[in-house]
Image (cartoon, rainbow, N blue to C red; front, side, top):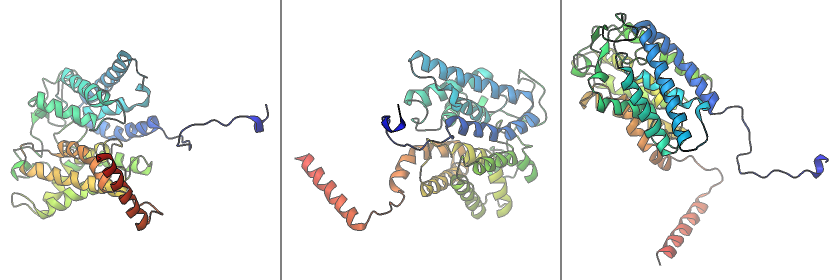
Length: 345
């Protein structure tokens, strides 16, 4: 049959194909997280790598098992579950028992993600949802921090030397600067969660994602800049403005949250202006929780709260529609009003 006689295929839009898919995007995210993982292994030992691998495997098993049980198409190949596993391990202390981490994986994949329909339909970040669940269920285990460079156990964390983090109530949460230097904070030689301590490695990963076009810089820049401005203007404990600001932006999970959590496609706004508003909101809430909340760190909860607001931000901050005149807008409003009145009769 000649080409002229072939029937055209009919399908819904969009009709533009692209080599970029979910798998390629998630693969880039995993690559961007490798530097932070290397830093975690260097400072906290092989247990950091083991915990991350266990978390990834558990997330993949839970996703495959759930979708098989409900006779749904398997989506494990898109690597989204693997990203959730890495991120959830990254926001947990290296001393957390593996079985607790696996429970967090179950909550993140099954409850937060799959019960709402799977990838693209969850309204909060699965990894952060899993962390919030673990914080509520096992608060002591989730706030037991290993001192970097003093690990000794490979499988068991019983021999790990524990201590306070820079943002703990012993230090910055009470307005006292930690013993660690700003350089220690920058490279990651401080206590904290597995993947949040090394700001320089997370920054390198974030720059990679921006260069690859996986994320836009709007949310990370707005998020970090808001925290920087507020903490510079309102330092605590009589500390210097610049010094306090640097400790605040380098401490905790700010860089991990700004580049890898808040930029999640599903749970963040879609427009550039909406992303800026979202980032500013995350920054405001982070500083508010750090200064006035019961938790010394506010990044996770700030992002979760803003996840819930993402839909509203998209409705309020809408991009301009070219060719849509003021007269057309008035006619659209009038037609909508007439339709509403007709429906009420």
